[in-house]
Length: 274
Image 1: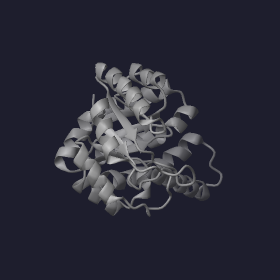
Image 2: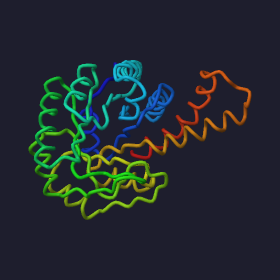
Image 3: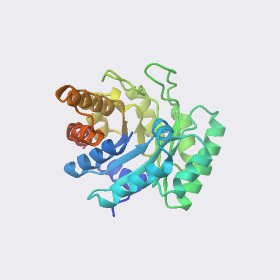
Image 4: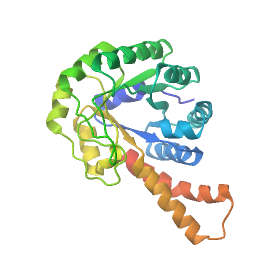
């Protein structure tokens, strides 16, 4: 059994100068591929169920799937609720056995974000579960603009909430389809000087592999959330499979053919952070 909490995989990463991949899951095939990739790399992995995934499939199903994969894995596997939007949603995930929850109060006023995040941290810690919070706002490539994290607010947020990890906005953007994002190193350095909490980059697909590796080894960023890059790899592999076998119709056979290329892409992501 290799279920792990977020704190259990991020503390060594912060201490030893590497980062852990938080991989956004949309179904069984990609989640299984990500665990296989982590095992091949001998690295921990964080399986994430985000809002889109939860709208597609009920949270209890995600919990059972993540736990089945973790229990059979040879490396630590974190089951993580990504972008939880309420106390009730985080409470449900904890009751279902998720080992980590992220509460996203980034659009709330600072005092309210701290109040709600602290309540969820206390609830999570009482159950032996980790909690990630967000300060500042990470925008979207074709949506809402980002609001950079204020280092002074980050220091207060970390101190007053007790989060195990803190997502920050330092030039990263969700759902970016190329690797052109640039990190505001000055802002990041000021955040690092203000707190010793492991930091998280959402929208990690927008950063080049070289930049991710550099940040993993030289900064307090210990977790990169990767979704778009892997979804693109999945889509490419699926199209190639159907083009090669235009008469194929069996769902299991079609999706199984996508797992190997997706595993290889996930290995690149996971190995590139160490």
